[in-house]
Image (cartoon, rainbow, N blue to C red; front, side, top):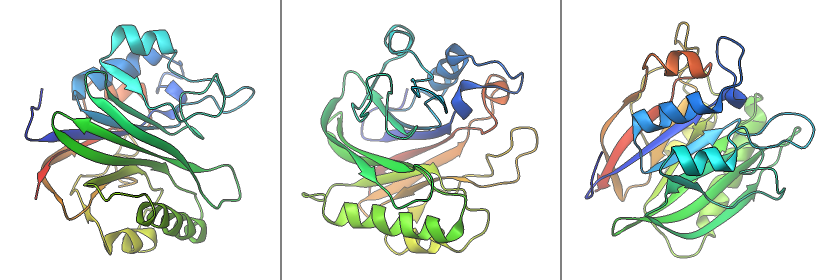
Length: 235
């Protein structure tokens, strides 16, 4: 466990809980999260796609088999987050504020934001899953950065999620104007990881002291993405 002058964060596209064996297994996702042992986690594709879009991870499983609570961002009782995006924090840490962020999109897209006090350090976390279209990704990046500019009291900020950006331009350049990227490796696809789709970005108040891709045996089966993680400290 990383404690306490540092904060460990992670981002994980859980593919609606469906692993490479085509089984939906939320317990397997929770096992991966326990392996990573992060303080704050951004999940993507955490709701089922159709119908009531219920949470992939039942609340009782999250409570009984993890140290985490979900920031209450959903607008549907059955959903844990907002358009499949969820922010998890340790139950021992204080949730100071949270919000669902509306993003411009052709299909339903959103981002989530939560302020958490990890130990004695306040942190603003943003989780996102951006569009497949490069034009819409840039519009969504602009919307997220605009939300941060009007979010009230500035805090050390980490943004993380599946940016769906295969190259080194587009929304990556937009985010890079104010944020530094953790130098994690490719996280997609778990069979042969070639895409750096998942990213962790930090504001100037934070420094990345370690980071990586969590490629455990369980993570190789639980989703089509590997989770990524970073250890942060005040700059």
